[in-house]
Amino acid sequence: MQAALQVLYPPQCISCSAPVTSDFGLCADCWRETPFIAGLVCDQCGIPLPGSDTGERVLCDDCMTIARPWGQGRAALTYRDNGRRLVLALKHGDRMDLARPASGWMLRAVRPILQPGTLVVPVPLHWMRLFRRRFNQAALLSRAIARGAGLDHCPDALVRHRSTGNQDGKTRDARFANLVDAFSVPRRRGQLIEDRDILLVDDVMTSGATFAAATEALFSAGARSVNVTCLARVAKDD
Image (cartoon, rainbow, N blue to C red):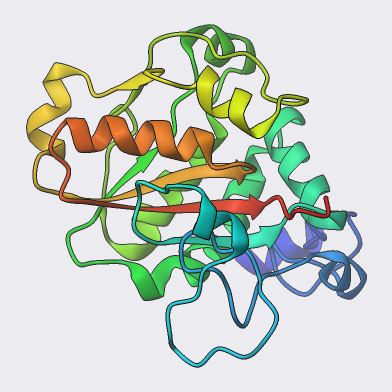
């Protein structure tokens, strides 16, 4: 049956629809245009750094100057070229199928910092944005990561109880101010969060303001530790 389906519907590149050898893959050209992160990275935000990975903890300039409430962080891609196109297709193009390969890339990046028994939690959308978009891309990614890692998943562990609008164009300080007290853990989820290691998942990290606000809410609810991961990290030059 599988062979017959592949004859009728041959695998296509998830980015450009060119023929590929397996489902949910990238063709050679799109693979070259996709900025996967490898090698030495900042231990808190996952951005690639110059130099070789010696196994020591290294931080980027931003993470040395900005207080990050979470412990460690990893990203699969930098937000440019085909990385940006894939994020936008998932987020605004109704390409929910992209969550499957994207979550695999994220799991590969974050697996070295995962703790046994970690609870995987997505950054939530405000209910009005969720109503318009019909799905939370972070929740699609977090569910697939949890399934791939054999971890528990709680898609409603956090609530965004006020709309924070679009962060584009805001300064770094304005981004952080806009998200103060934007998230909380609902009472019914408090016992699940208490004394747990949490992996917080989002699609993109720019300043880290969203991750910071969500992490603070998780710690307020008694989380033991919080690490973060995103599909794409916005680099300073972007």
